[in-house]
Image 1 (tube, rainbow, N blue to C red):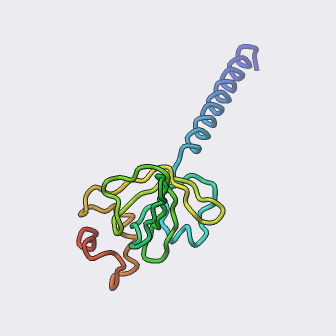
Image 2 (tube, rainbow, N blue to C red):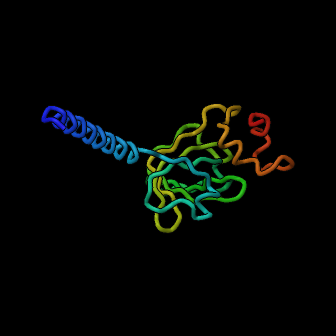
Length: 155
């Protein structure tokens, strides 16, 4: 191999190493910003690690909303057909938030299975439901735990 060829090989190898390093840094930064969507049954089954930022989707369980006096802290449960996950949120809830309403909650699970939320989004249209939520709320074709007002929107 001549001197010129060796320089070219080293140049190409250096460029490839730099490209690989940049790609690795990009993927690492991207992975740190991912938010996975989970359903209550996945969390209760223990398939979601604690202290990891997630999105939880489901319905606000009837009779589960509790407001603390003289504060903005509210506790409620998000449910699907199989399970309920307790949620604690300190802040102003959306106007459409109510029992039976579809919600998506952003936050972290603590060590006791409670989602400490920093953001709560309520579904804005009672006729629309994401395909993932509709699928999670229908365990099989013959029965459904989904509220009657939402069953026609999911099919």
